[in-house]
Amino acid sequence: MAFSRAASWLALILPIALLGGALISEYVFGLYPCEMCMWQRWPHLAAIILALGALALRKHKIAKFIVIDAALAILISGLIGGFHAGVEYGWWDGITACASTVPAGGDMLESIMNAPLVRCDVAPWSLMGISLAGFNFLLSVGGAMLILGLIAKGWKEARHG
Image 1 (cartoon, rainbow, N blue to C red):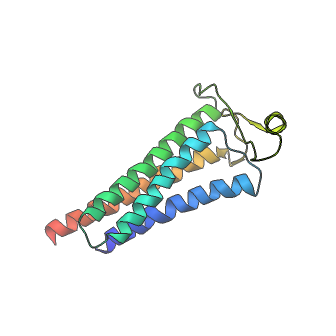
Image 2 (cartoon, helix red, strand yellow):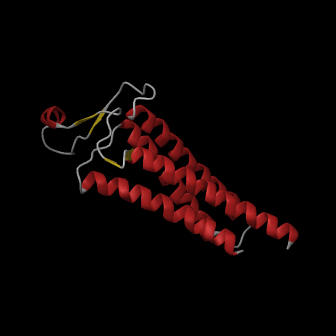
């Protein structure tokens, strides 16, 4: 059963780390998210909730299926990140809308007029040519495949063990 425990913990830690990194980049380093960046966050939040549920129900058979759902949520975030990275790299067209951050309180019109405009087709940061969306693609798709592989290995061991 160590495989399912490892898969459950990975399904929790990976989206926490990626979502935490996104929030730190926004609130500490001022890298405001565009609309597609926000789309990538929701599946990670769902994966965190699912992984917590799987860990809470770890003694029940349904926990494995909840971990699979968490892995699929992580995979969805990664695929959105892959699409977003392709838009940033100019491989294909993206959405036409952009997002801005409007703080709560104060003069709403002034806040809107002074809010930074964030384009989805421009990477605000990259490392070795890989944008944040690109890293989300690589880490989320790889992590989801690892989680699913751990679950598959556990099922195979349970059948033959």
